[in-house]
Picture (cartoon, helix red, strand yellow):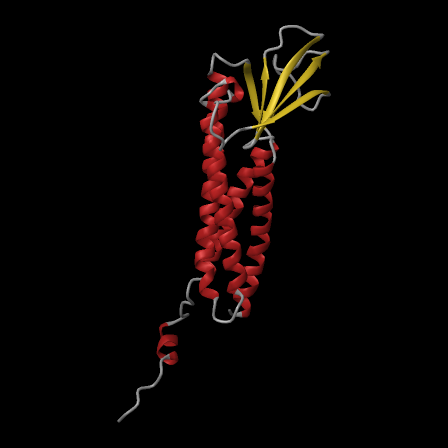
Length: 228
């Protein structure tokens, strides 16, 4: 790998690390969306919720003043009793009614599975970048770029599945939730998508063969013909 090429790869690797950190933060945390029911009166307890790919947390909040932006319960940062439960994604047997809607489990299984694929592509891309610094192994930058691009695509698909999940929650007549907003885990997932896609494209461009500055370079670099 040329020195100039190695410098570009190192700079891109910093961006990749930020994207990977954002993705890991999004995958392991449970603040993708915050849901709240309608608040009918003050000095009452309402139950808000926040969730991620693996866990749902419900929080009982005592309302002492009206929400100026609406009639929702919250904000979720208010003190209250908290109860968290993990989704039974990959277990067989009795169906658990996640979010009080049976079909909601299917959305979270899909989003979690796609996120796992994203982590798998991210690991492969990281290995390719590490091994590309070996002598004569710069060709590994191309698959690395593709792996990181695939990781970014997977995480944005997972984001869209979660968006549809939230929409179904709000539209369902079987739930108490009427309001929602996306939280910082959702922002981390979107940021990781942007950074990983840009990093993947950058690695593909860096790995492209050197183009001659003028037509004479190709002729001058060619080996002279030998006469028998």
